[in-house]
Image (tube, rainbow, N blue to C red; front, side):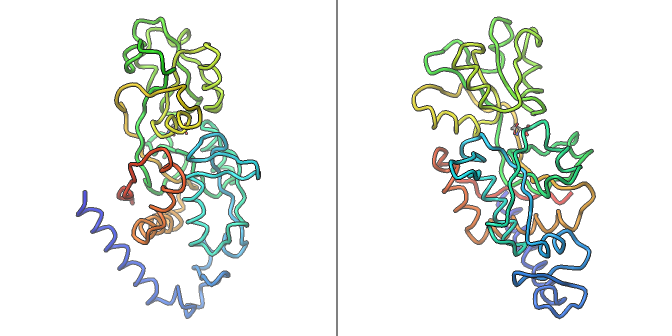
Length: 294
Ligand code: GLU
């Protein structure tokens, strides 16, 4: 793992040098234009966004630690910080980033329709989604877990739903909703789905469901915000590698984002982003998983 990462960083460094030597960075290449002291190859998404001095980032608005809309109307969190790093590399200032809310079930569509230039939204990379969009990353690996009320000791893992007497909430179009179905005796009776996770937390509070399931880090955010009320049960039972969604077939943009991630892993921006956001309730600082340049 270590070697892989080192090799990846070395490869990225060679690539960066290569680009500079071709004149991409110093403006010698007449096929490149740009503003904000960056130049990009003509016709690329990078050039279009840089010239427009604007990027639309799809993210979550109700997930503490990853994407949570604040009183100032702007979302904050690890995903938002990743979006800012990408904008920075595109030469776009932070105040020119437009955020749109992308609940789980809407992410592919928002990318396909061009309503978002990128989606950074606790977005698990998988083959089904790759049929419609492409992913840069992963930039983080989460895992599915279950949240219950602190005093509830009756649910200890996904198989606690097999008896059929407990209800669990998740979100439409999410991987955890699909996964938990396999552990239910009766899907129609036991699975409650909403568009966003805060509605699941409300349903747990009112007793409509006995548990909420999604990625551990999302649940940890809700635990932190509701001190003493909730807990996780057992171990993570899936792997959820988070990617940055972009338009299918835009390989140059995907490569650019992957290069940006590797740069941020090694120059400290990635670690700082974590510590300022999700790191406030999860002290396991990630080192940045090897990106998958499929
Ligand atoms: N990572 C999972 C997914 O992409 C769950 C989190 C979410 O719904 O955003 O579906």
